[in-house]
Image (cartoon, rainbow, N blue to C red; front, side, top):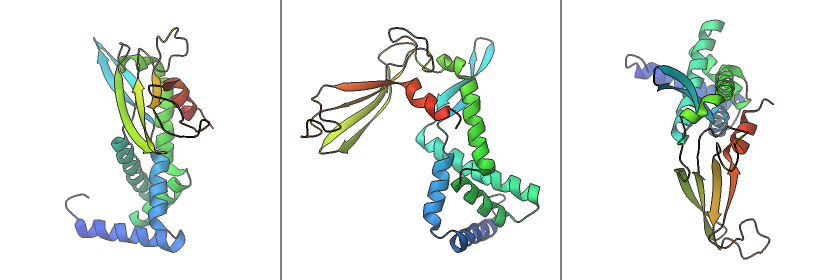
Length: 211
């Protein structure tokens, strides 16, 4: 919204949703899927080390993922309006549909950001801790009658490093839990304490690989 033009913004918003309802059906499901398709996994931030400034890739938080996705839809709609000389309502409608189908200006912004982060991954060690045993973040989920703790930890040096030895230059995503399932062949039927870890590069890099 610019200059407090609430009525104009409300009219654009309603008209865009009416177009989606007439052509695509379930507006909420389509909009949620479009935003999910645009959420970036990583981004590039400028970090100054001594007198040098580096483009350092970092993982995007959940809230920022959503804000970037919505921002790209709005920017794509504005760019489409200017390039096609059409109304903002129509360009917004087209951009949301394109995002739902994984194409369009907003989707290209996400793709370019992932490509840049992949190119700059050699500078990732400037962002991550250099000591072992650091807990970056963790969250707990309850399922199958027990609790599971997901934890990104043991970050050391460059998480994208593929040549580290004995844990150097590697980060791990670990899963811990206990008494999750009575079935000995169940997916989480281990006894506490027990954990399984994956190198972060094995989680992130396949997502960045071109399809």
